[in-house]
Image (cartoon, rainbow, N blue to C red; front, side, top):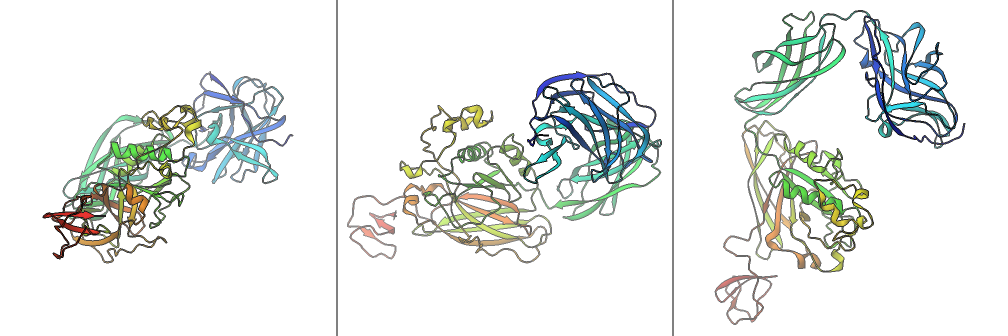
Length: 603
């Protein structure tokens, strides 16, 4: 065989065969029970080709005395099939079987001459076909599936033949395992997971219980109880969509129930007490944690972005952050950390690394690192923001104030933090950001690698079209002279990432309020200060839990000291010039001056 990497020659085709007839207590296991497929292909060398897929033990662990009867697979045309193979969890062959009848286009079934036991840890199934220079022998679904699509290829880096997974690129192989088992019980339901949202005292908690049915009968009704803080509530539900008979029928059920009058973290128990009016033979019960808060507070989600004017792909980060700022002003707090290149006029060394990758990347609430334009789903960063902003926080930041000192070299930040459930240790960090930063200086121009790309090549999302402006023909294709917002200009962190602010080290009962204050230094860079509008500087407070995740945050505009307006001194001198101590001067001095009876600030 030639030593080449896998290269699918994909074409589109939809072929549907007649439904495969299963006998009593027989089941199909694999990537899909559909008899259609969408794509087909081949590999770029000739000879025996092995393709396969994983069958996980979860797919058959509920089937008693499960045995494999044979393997189904789909081919786009008539090809020579050497054999099908049942492997163990280590990919070692358990059983190989040659076809007993000619192969046809579409789905084929090769039955084992004797039923085979399955590896209890998991199994793998494959078929071997002969690749010629022109034929096609592989069918797949484009959507990913747990079993995936694996091909036995020569790996040039490892210098050996090995199984390679192409599921992310090619989806799922059209192959299935036919099994037989002892009859299923009438009803066999298990609880796999329970997800409950935090709720306020004396309200109703909501959640979802995820279940799996391995029953021979259809399920139409469920009875269950929820026990929290010694109180049990009973419920009866008629399912809007009945649960089909058969193994591995996964489904979810939404629920809600009353919360107690005291905040806390409660162990709650959900118990299935009836299925179609019958009591389950075995107890079906699962505990989960229910968080009850003194009240539901708004969450402000922090998006910290690693960026810089020298980063050619950072325009997409600029677009993503601007979109969040415009569309979600109440939920979004941005911190654009310009640390990509030190000649960036907005470069700020005083910050930590919350988990950045290469520029541009962002971190949401210090929980997830992702692309600041496409997000984790490739559908847009806004999808991730909405998900995080929907989570009820354990703390709230209230009574936040921020004001300059007299010469505007520092910002005094004061805040109260309210604990909404019994809480342990929290850290607190303080950040200064600036909006509307821009300059005509060439040093402020944003590097742009999209200027030579079309809109399609750039991957512009329909709901965030401003990336088009950076593409070929756009207004910023050749010169990206931008207005920068949410730019980090100072913080309680040192240049080594050490936080100088003191957090909350003791336990904090629900309902208590603790006060904190900190002075953050303003920047000293002349190029940055020349572009700075002191009316567009903001203080951000981050409350950080023991897992180093942001529990909640708040943002406020920095104001002048009480009684002093944000007015710059006039350019003309005056003989009536005094400092705050009443001393006269020939000309306004740096800081606060009283000129003709009015207070002015000289930078």
